[in-house]
Amino acid sequence: MTPPPAPAATVPAPGVTPAAGPAPAAGPVRGGLLVLAGMLLVALNLRAAVTSLGALLDEIRVGLGLSGAMAGLVTTLPTIAFAGLGALTPWLVRRWAAPRVLVVAMVALTAGQVLRAVTGSAAVFVLTSALALAGIAVANILLPMLVKQHFPHRTGLVTGAYTMALTVGTTVAAASAVPVAHAFGSWRAGLGIWAGLAALAVLPWVPLALRARAARRAAPPAVAVAAPARVQPGRTRLGWAMAVYFGAQSLSGYAIMGWLAQLFRDAGYRPEAAGLLLAGVTALGVPVALMMPALAGRLATLRPLVLSLTVFSAAAYTGLALAPHGLAPLWVLLLALGQGAFPLILTTIGLRARTAEGTVALSAFAQSTGYVIAALGPLLVGILYEATGGWTAPIGFLLVALAVQTAAGMVIARPRYIEDER
Image (cartoon, rainbow, N blue to C red):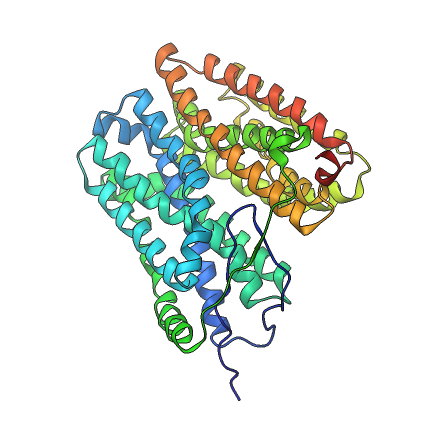
């Protein structure tokens, strides 16, 4: 006998902890396989629109007449969208069921990718890229919530599955964007083909959205009861250190995603090879992301990890500045190791809070503030690249950001809790 659909979940605003109440039903969920398939298809799309742009950036700049500053703005858009629009997602879910929100998000991603691939206007290209990234920003927030809602007893398994799908989408888009563009004779094909994948991701969510709408009409309205926030990370040294570390490592990550392929092309690599080297950073980072949480949880202090990641990144940046062609695979490996700072900071958010309330508050502050910091990375790299005509100044900027990241990392390395720093 099929159980009735569960009531729609009420999602609190960022940094607001819901009052204690009965947990959602954890029994079988109708259409669970369809939900899982939909989640995996969405995850495949979460970075493809970003890495395909990075791989084809030179062709796009020439084709649309983008200046270095404008190209930097385009590569900065992901962090702006993730910081701003992601924060609106709980508000959206309080008003509409998550499947309905995801349908709109994937339609926005599809439309944005199609429109930016056919336009001849630089301004329209930026606006339609923002539309596509708005869909990604919303989906970024919804997937973890859907895991808890539909797969409460398989959280690790399902999270790992959609994380792997995200990585596959990221890597494939970076590696194949240039070959697809060459096969069709235009960068527009290499950029626009991913709209088909986004359109495919809409399909599982349409019946789920219709079902969720019917369930909401049949069920009494959900009531959200918010408890006042007692933990305020913005007033603590630890909270700001977490935000700075998150921001600095994201700054370098998005700068690498947006500009590394261009650096390798300037060093003499063919476009296809440059795209593969960019994809290598993501692919080699998968085992790092899997191991980092276990390492962080076992160590009494995180200083060895913080310093090791700094050494890897510093060596990679130095190598890219001095010998970008001869030892490129080594620099890619070191970059992948250095990007382990991302899973480290996500793990540390949980390690530095005693309570669920503290974890939510610290996560909201660190990520929202951090993405604002991260938005500067691709933009400043683009400005420095255009102003100097080379990579010495941009890499110097990334080394300065790494120094800031390390200083913040030393603050968060010592065991302590955000609740103790009010």
